[in-house]
Image 1 (tube, rainbow, N blue to C red):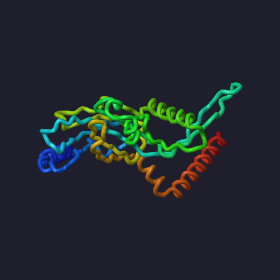
Image 2: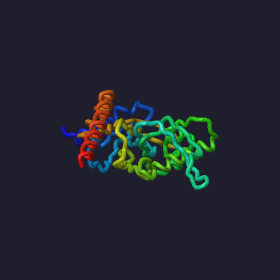
Image 3: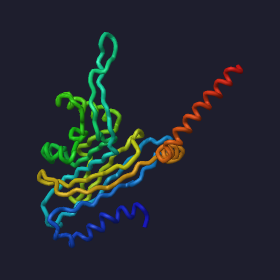
Length: 258
């Protein structure tokens, strides 16, 4: 069975088993992704991910429950120090800074309806259903208002870079069971482990969630260099120093002769 056939078989097979799941009290989510591994090569221009699946209601076809679906795709978390500059006497100087311990390198949300129409702000904050609800884990001795301003600045900066995105009608639901969403990864994405979390929501409550993992890796010459730097960091550093000294010595010899 080919890759696409396997991915299509998973949600359809669970739908066939739906009569046996009627004893469940909550709906069952079956998430799938079009690519579980994305290879970043030289000239990489980005990738389009298709996230799809099925939501199985415990009451089957007789259920009148209408579900909303929200998909959250997050990249590896990283520590960031954000500085604010102010111009004093014609010179740009640092006027403040804030540290964030777990800022996602990539964050995208796709929903079947606007988030504010699906859940209340408290629920959205718990499950990070929107760019304004990203849990950045800020640190530092600064006022809450200033900290919130830095957080907004970070989100806006990454939105301009295409790394943070929110689509209020980015999920399409068919027959109340099958859903699909498309999320674009830009060319400047960070490599690492990505997590796609899908939520089934009804009457303002998150009734089910499921996750799918996606790996973004560098391959080719760039991937080899990254692997060497991580696996043999000491030898890689020594090699870089020797190469730099050697290139400097060679350039000096060439220029001295000329």
